[in-house]
Length: 243
Length: 62
Image (tube, rainbow over all chains, first blue to last red; front, side, top):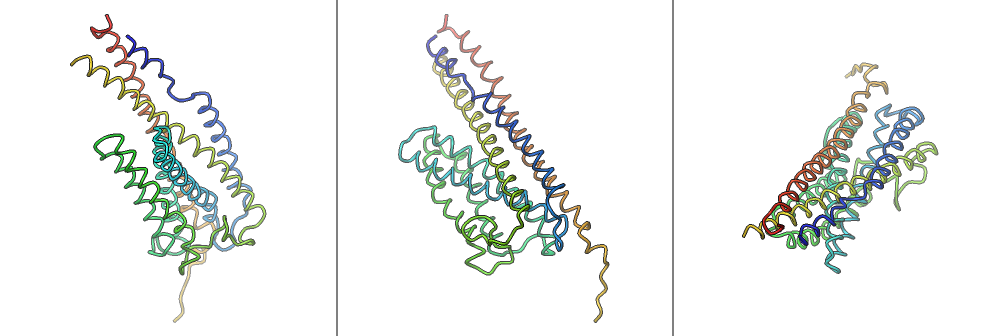
């Protein structure tokens, strides 16, 4: 009976009110963001309306960097402390990061067609971003194919630390090499006059919106992982009793 | 050689399908992922409840 109670007592699967609150904030902020993007942001004189993709494309790309930074931190902390909590954070953040980097590539491809007259070109920013996507897809595959959960966590932690090396390479690729991709608009190499005041404010707002969405998505993924662990414990108890 | 260009294809509004595609794909991927995670959570919750019931009914608990 104690085993059953032990499993039951750990049944707090996430923090529903916090998750709901985060979802509500992200949802409302996203609606306001869409209003700003389509009704307030100025139309680009050269690129036209398609330039509005910028307010989604840039924050999404930055969120993928943030996600992989969290993977890096979580992985490092897991290797130091060996606490499953850090592995769970890294795992959830990696999966959400892959979603964001996939979207960064897709929105970039769609934006490139009318602007560069091609869907894809093997220039430094695009190529390094594709490599980033492959690294973290491989990270998720390593987790799936590892023989045990503890080995999966260790292998993934090592990959999460080494894989992060590509993030600064992606950022600096447009500075280091000749590239047709525009220069950074955020960070140390951002051009001061790249954006007008309104554009900067809308980009900042969009960025904050995506931070809330990112946190919400990571929380949802962590809840799922908690349930997977819970299910594993119950199955283990059942197997032990049937032996 | 003189190159003829259709003016309306170079107007800003001509890029609207790309704008629509970029936002539509973003929403589909984001909602798709959240829907997938929520469906998995729902399935897990059902399975946990079912197995907890089985565990309570198992001989060692009696």
